[in-house]
Amino acid sequence: MKIAAAAREPEDMQTYECPLCDYTGFFSPRFGSSEIRLDGYCPKCSSLERQRHIALWIRGTPVTSFGRTLHFAPEKCLFDAVSVNSTSVTGADITEGRADLVLNIEAMELLDRSFDTIICNHVLEHVDDKKALAEIFRVLSFGGRAVITVPIVPTWEHSFEKEGITRPSDRHLYFGQRDHVRFFGWDLIDRIKAAGFSLTTIPVTGDEAAKHSINRDHVIFLAEKPVVQDES
Ligand SMILES: [Zn+2]
Image (tube, rainbow, N blue to C red; front, side, top):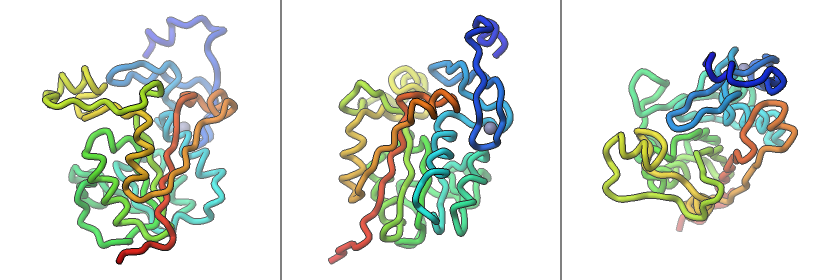
């Protein structure tokens, strides 16, 4: 961390505001598995860009209540922001001991329509997204919503998947992380819609990016299950 911070001239250092913990000051470098973001981390609550973007969206959304919220791979720093808008929040993770429920997002042991909101932040790049999106759709109530973010390559129309890439080191090379199975392109929109959702994409604004240190190409995919569903 010190190396990256010291590599910058003082006039290139900026202060930012964290919408999750209200910290204001220098942010810390984030050493990802395949990239370094110089001001990626809030040093107080450890929020990342995607979590700050979601916090800002929650703050500004006209949705008055998320109802019963299921939060996959729940991030501690997001908990309060999600809780404020929810009647209940249940954490879920495929690994035991990390959350309230142990759930495989591709085959959730949950009743149909048992949650009103699902937070799914950087999960779909780890799994079979077709199965996961079908399950998210099934578990959501009519009119419910999924808040989805993924690593996306903004110049790619199509997601990049490749058979035979199974070794962790190859996945790192091809997909950016040892446990990723693809890099998404913009066809994620079609994949979400194919599961039955209507979709709104929420970009980060120029002001939000500058003030809260969020990648300018970051997008929240807000997938909404229709209010009236013909199940015949
Ligand atoms: Zn923070």
